[in-house]
Image 1: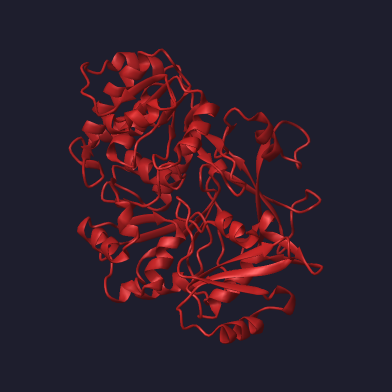
Image 2: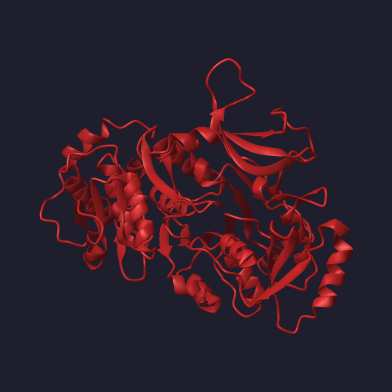
Length: 503
């Protein structure tokens, strides 16, 4: 039985010592090198005499960052991936919350850290003078139980205020075991990582590599700006598995790139983090019909995924597809406004129970208590559920349908409206590449931002939308953008759009 995530690496390094584990185009580690370097670094951390404490890893997305994560876990602590491109004020605010005893970075970023942090710093690219003392590591790991933290990811969510979500080893182990079995991941799998390490969608990329002996390629960020280069990269590295945010797949579809270049080795295309429009999914399915497509749903607070849907039927461009069924060992409750189980087709808040739940928010018991609550259906013993803030319902097929965020459901002219329905209708017209709908609270109007060709005749677009939606849902204001603003995780930056509406 797995207790600590490093047990995956131990087993895999024994089976495939000379196989490439991770490659960032500049540097590679075999599984044996990854294990040995992580253990050497872990010994330096152990010498600081800390355990079960957060250790920020201030490194760019790289092979060294993956090695550093493993080292932190070998040392009996938990890592916090940091965004090296964030403003100093944001990084400092995370450090203020963590009060870290040790920080991991490299020599080129050392001065950045020293400008606001005067504690212990270890540079992962310095020459290690000591050979790892595995006995020292084994002694530490004997003290660890599977409910202790593996990492904390700071997420701002829709509010913009960072929250340090703390995830346990057990949660990740459950996730990875399920994913390996469900998607048949093995040593022949080649993974192309897209998301930054401070985003929870990177977790399966890293630990499917640890657990199954897959090879992980870290795709340079600039390739996602130039999708043609991205297709070349997928073919060059013979990538057969991706788990990406929809924005990347949408971009490829908008450029109609698959008509020029196809990823020849791709077999499994997973997506998550936000809604994947069927218009763009249908483009991919048309040009790569033999691939498996799967939608994985879940917030950071439940280790990233609690439901999944393997696309098994046709959908029109304007339809929504399900977010599927619960993952193994994830309990899904859809609770109506009376805190009762919702009936079929009745909307309610999606809530989750099980080992995938985060331990809470680091150093914030008040925020933790607001969303990690006692199951209102259980009056007999403590049972914590996480209230996601997402609205969903069960359909007649026994699948979960995602409606949208509670905070994106508005009351307009007496009607309750889900903004995502307006976005789906706009995409279904075929006039726009992508869209985002915002409610202007000051003027009480619905505003649609859209990305389309400059010669789009707005009157035709509006007329088509009017045929798809009831009058009370039709946007009042339309704003064309050359490109949607994106946040660091590759999602549409709704905070920026809200600011643009209110400016």
